[in-house]
Amino acid sequence: MKHALHVELTPTNACNQKCSYCFESGCHRDGITNEEADRQLSILSNTVKAVNEGDYDGMCLTFWGGEPFLNVEFMLCAIKILESCKDYRISIYTNGTYRKGMDMFLDGVNHATMKRTSLQFSYDGEPHHTVKRGYSPDVMIEYVKKFLDAGADAHFKATLSLDMIDSLPDIWKSYESLFMKLGNVVSYSPTLDTVDRISEEDVQMWISAMKKIARLEFDFARKHGRPLMSWFGPGYRGNCRLTNTVNVQPDGNIYICHACPYMSDCRKTLLGNTSEIETFDDVTIKTYPDTMSEDCVNCGATYCTICHASLLRPDEDPAKEWLNVKSREPLRCKLFREFGKIHLAFILACCRNRAAK
Amino acid sequence: MTIDINRLVSAILHLREASENLKSINPELSLLLLQTALTLASKNGIKEDVIKDMDDTAKEIAGETRASC
Image 1 (tube, rainbow over the protein chains, first blue to last red):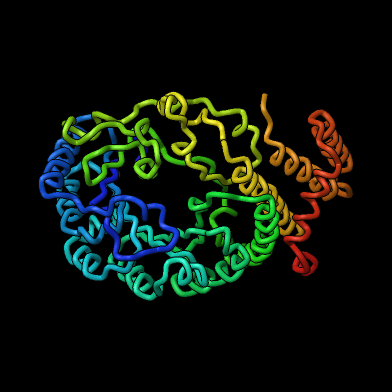
Image 2 (cartoon, rainbow over the protein chains, first blue to last red):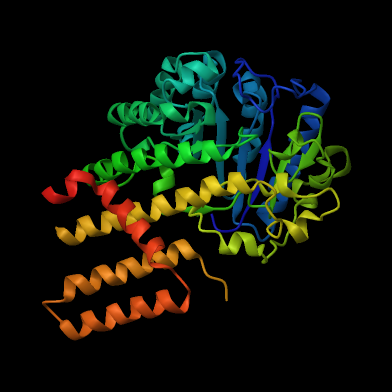
């Protein structure tokens, strides 16, 4: 969908797991009250009507958490409303371990809607997953298969902690094994969003680990026609889409994206509250700033997910400054820049290999 | 105009590579590509060691497997 309204609902902030590095661990773990759930569903219904009569091509509804399947009843009600939209897609972020909720979803959603549903399963690769998350990925893998069989799309998201960077080749290999089991749906897409402090030593360790991965990727790409780790793909620089998108929390607060509620100063990214609006589109930001800080334009990173929301100062207007923010984390930027060098060398090695053939 | 140095170095290396591959097939085009690569490098102040570093990394990534291609 070219021009969609993106609404992200949070059925609950509670979670059935206790991952050691979770950035939500210090936050409220509350569910949604019945009154607030009714309000959000009523706004969703108004929003679908407005989208059907307006210029949007359709809606993308995302379920964020906590673990959203803990409140699958809310999800199913929201989907029922969404099904009357002229076009729609559904995304779900899940750890893939709450059987009861996932079974209810598989039973309660029809095939046509399942085909429009995409799930992102959290899987770090081993030994990272077991060490940091503390649970086996077996249930998650079982349900990936079930959702794929039901017609949904599935992909994976990993978190990579810098203190486990030495294990990166093993993590990569465990993803390769998963690829052999599940096929083309598997890509290793790690984020570094829990990295707080980085030393120059970490950067050097990072370079060394990424070079090892680049060699593994070179062989993998020759066999399978694409890299396993998404970072070695076409490249990506950016973060939240900012425009025409809202993240709705169980307390009714509405933010630019799901990272914002966890920031120490989230006032600037607070768009409003469900008690004040008729449709979710009432509070979306409509214009994407077309400027970018010179630091970012000149940066050699080919892949970057540094969150713009986290870079905003309290006095900065997101609608004006979203891309114009300057990084205050030079070493974190360096990680991405150094990866950019290795990525381009990887592309060069692949081109040479192709030319030699 | 702002320039992404990593991409520029990569482009220079690609031009050099293409120049090398075309040497025996089309020497004129090969020379033109090499000159373009050199002009790009000198006009943007790219030092030889930056280009060499990326070239070395690419060879390191391809490892032993490159010889068997």
